[in-house]
Each structure stands twice: as structure tokens, then as C-alpha cells.
Length: 409
Image (cartoon, rainbow, N blue to C red; front, top):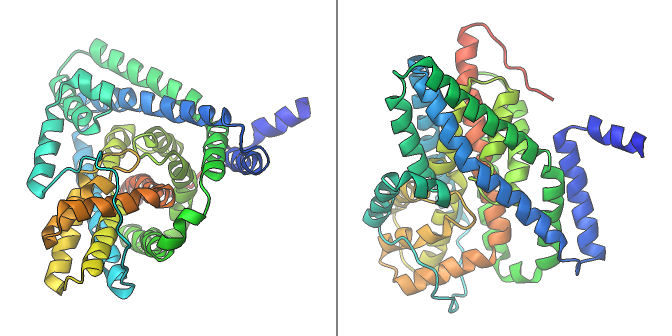
């Protein structure tokens, strides 16, 4: 037993997660009725979601209160990458939908889902989230509000004395320590999440939407394996794939199973720390990415919207298609970092073509049917891009100083 424990302790976290995945599949195949195993996964994701708001709040305040003005250029570059990457993904989804036009069998779905409405309503919702009560923002995991208030408090405290700054640093370090404890439970949590997916979700429900899934997942793979590497190459002028694969492996896998960009914030923070990045930068860029860097969401919105358009026989010209890509980008930035957040933005894009809300909500219903695969792949792309762009931006500055990027094992 001691030898087994020693071998386990010497394994890396990713290897442990893979073992957990295999155990989850085996348990789902042989003892699918042991539903109590699912509770472990719920506890793991719940713990990540619980610590993430506090982590973001304290890290952002602590970072900004130190007044690292030299980091403003890096943050600007990261934000540009986030927006450009999301727009490029929306264009890829739009092009794929024209190459492989899809029609849907639209059926009645539950009317209990509340869409965000038109573009003006999306912008209004974002602005209201920004001025949400800071305590309520923490309780409800409203990351737009958390970031807004953290930035305000961070700027307000930058002229405070060193004792207050030390206290903020201590709070952020203590929260980060709790995060590390939770991440050590990832293999067990992922095992449970895999068990739940395999035991509860057969493949029969995906037969009618197989082509739709192919277009969605295929577009996301093109962005992850072609578009993102091209962006990174033109930033660092080196082979981008070792870094891309590292981010997909360490961030994408956990995001795939948690299906929540917000829950994956602590994981991405841990990755940035392993790379030795500047904490003042990634403590802001990672939670910001979970809020506005939504490449996968923009693909989902554009592909499902055009599926409705093709189903109704609506003609779409080049200019309208490009406007749809921009609209999908704006809408994706308003998507919440939780499971299924992008689907509720589909009616926004459908409104561009005059599609009624009833039909748009049926498309949302289709999205929820395929959501187990669609949302998992979407979140994996979203979250891995957050850490990928953050690392690449800082590495670009390192090269100017003659430093090299060392990818940790």
C-alpha cells in the first residue's frame, strides 16, 4: 500500500486526472446505478465555484493596489487578443455553417428559459451587473460586478499604507492556498464528473443532431488547433504548438468536465503560477478572460443561429453574415461563465434576421439537448484560450528581455 501511495504522490496532477477519468468510465460501465458517486463531482465543482469569487476579488485588489503601471500595456494586449480571438472564432463558425448548411427539426421546448433579448438589453444587463452590490456580486458569482468593484477598490487603495497592502497580500495568498487544497482533489472530482456523464447520457439523443455537433466541435477544433496557434505564432515567432497543447491539456481537460469558465479560474491561476508569470497581470487577465474571452460561445451562437436561418430558408448575404459574426462576438462577451450561458444569447442573434422568439427558443432547446458535448467543448476552448493568451503576451515581453519560455512538466 505504501508503494502505491508513493507512486501516486509522485505522479503529476494531469496523470492523476487521466487515471480518475478512466476509473470514472469503468465505474459508469459496471456500476451505473451507484449515483451517490455523482455527489463527489458536485462537491468538487461547488468548491471551485465557491473559492473563485473570493480569489478573483482579493487578487485583483491586491494587484492593483500595488500600482504596477508598467503592466497596463500587457493588459491592453491581452484584451485585444481576447476580442480578436472571439471575433475570429465567430467568423469560423459562420463560414462553417455556410459550407455545411444545417436544418433542424424544431419542436416545442420548455418556456421556462429566459433569454437576454436584443443587443440593447445585453448591454444594459452588463452595465447593471457592473454596479451590482459588491456583496451580492460575491454571493451570486457575478464576475462582471466582482471585477468592477475589485478594480475600484484596488485603485482606491493604491495610495494606502504598507500595512493594508500587506494585509491584502496575505488574504490573497491564504485564498490561493485554499485553492491549492481544492485542486489536489481534482482527480476524484473529475472521476465523479466522468461517471455522471457516461452513466446518464447515452448517444441516442445525439443521432438527429450529429451533423450539428460535427460543425460545432469541428469549428472549435479549427480555432484551437489552427487559429489560436497562428495568433500565438505572430506574437512570439516560435512554434506555438507545445504551448497550445500544454494549455489544452492542463486547462482544457478540467474545463471540459466542469463545463464552467468561472469554475476553471482557479485552475488557470495555478497554471500561470507554474509558468512563473507576473501575478499582477494574470490575477486580472484570467478572471477577465472568463468574462469576455468566449471563442467557443461565439461559435455556438453563430452556428445555431444560422441553423435556424437555413431551416427557415432565409437568404443571408456576405455583409449580413459579417454583422452576425460581430453580433455573436458582442453577445458572447455577455455570456455568463457558467454551464449553458451562451445558449441564452441565441435569441439576440436570431433577432438580426427577424426570427421570432418562439422559434429562437426552440433552437435554444436543441442547444440544451446537445449541451453535454457542445458546452464541454465550448468551455474547454474558452478557458484554455484565457491562459494561452495570457502566457503568450507575457512571453512576448520576456523575449525582448532575452528570457526564454520554459514549459513546466
